[in-house]
Length: 249
Length: 249
Image (tube, rainbow over all chains, first blue to last red; front, side):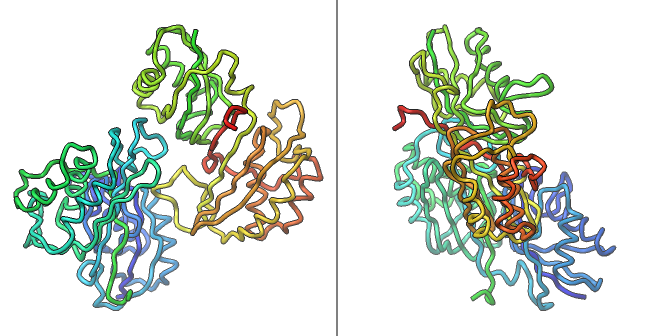
């Protein structure tokens, strides 16, 4: 048995999420089916994070165990060939020790959320960004975001379906920047709660629109109550950017 | 009658081209149909350039004449509403003099061609870039490109279906740059022949792959013969970037 670490990129639009679902297509099933066609083995894919339907990934990290004798480059090429036409690509593949685990060894996860701040509907980037027609004050959003950085009880920013044992997490980074008509929210943490990024972005967008004062974000956090959430941003603006591991340092 | 200048962005994937076609959907038809629903008038769209099936536009310039009394902002919003779900957006709209013509007044056109220089298939940017798996030497491509800049007979780089009266054109710019795994070719001229950008890009790609020596591009130009063309790059990597007019200066 050899353990292969994979770096995976995908367009989340046609999927019900990264992880296998009973009710629709998933990235995991696409790749496990491709691996079966390559190896004849029932391969299980483990990944650093779960993603909701419609959420994208630039460099998800995953692993799979394979009995067949195959070189990493050949496995990558074969998976990319067999996964077609699904919009999933393996961009890197290497052999890792048997005790390396894409999810449990992961010590850092980062996301970017992309907002198209314009009135015109999206064409080339449809399903790639959340379109917000009202002018956003990205500097106010960035200031308000700072209230969420650090060790907090993120109950307000957590889906009722979240399976995490504790709502207490340390948010390492939450930065808002603008480039032309695009506003990007960067976030990083050891781990996130279910819907945490989308919930934080939704509240920051309300600040950017002027519908919330900046202090409302801190108040929502303090409330520790899902009812205090202003808005959950839609999934299609969210990208899993990267997963980091101790050996990366 | 009022003449409105429009700036148009579109995803060329589902269209047979910008201009109206007998055999399939076009951007022109989408917008003329939308204008009919807004005004009740048979409106004709005139544009700075023609584009092939699959070619995209970031800021095409067009105009239409309308009898109905409507403000530019309202017209833009109404067209964007009525053109859905087609991937076309009007990003700017203004009133121009009756003698301003999107095509005949245009004195400069620019394109960018995007190549994804990587082995993995495209996911999020499928139909947005030409994927070339072989490592491209973008510096050799940039050097070879310089042979095409200036006043030349571009017969080699012209489609047999080209309707231009003369194959002699002045190419003002042809630059190749790399950003990570993306290679971009920028070109600008007063006007281009049919397939000219895709034909130039195809030959430069052959240089980048090492299949052509750099001098072959100049030789192909000198041949003034379509048979000397090495490769016509596919349409889905090509973007019409902007059209310029004397009053922009």
